[in-house]
Image (cartoon, rainbow, N blue to C red; front, side, top):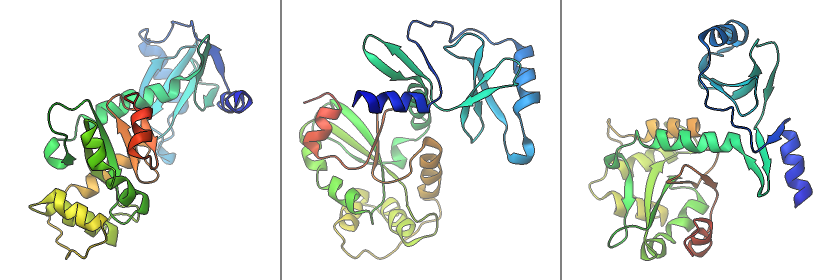
Length: 249
């Protein structure tokens, strides 16, 4: 296990000391301008969205719009593509993933509750998970059967649509039907139980927007769960296992 983690860290190309505190310092405009002139490639669709000081002195975290994040020298003559890990007494910490966690929290905050299909527990929830789902996905169907137990344990389940076959596909039409229904919860449950429900795709359904949001957040399969802290949990987990993952067992 240790060797596997080490290989993962090395594959990210760079490992740093966890005591580094350089990240968060203001970036000089001249540095930003230099990085834009060196790294932006409009012909390739590479446009810089943000530049931040990284945990390594002299290196900058450069986030491309609708693209990857890289770590670049201030002159922009060298950059590293991959996640940055810190090393400390508690082991390795994926700093790149922590950045993505914060981004996911911000992205999900833009989605209104009315655009979700929510299964809430009785009383105040202990925690909530946001689940990108596809009604035709076997493991999404299996996870949905765990929702009553999750609710019983105080977990709120917030569904967002992610038609794996893309916008306009049969899975898209099924999800749109659920989101367009008067009884959204009941319709989604019927679809996941493989019951026949006539397609009813209303023009103002949010499925396409949620699908694009999922892609932006790094969803590449369903179910994909996101915690309130932005942590991505890919794939199916039973209610019991998920309680352990959430630290609520």
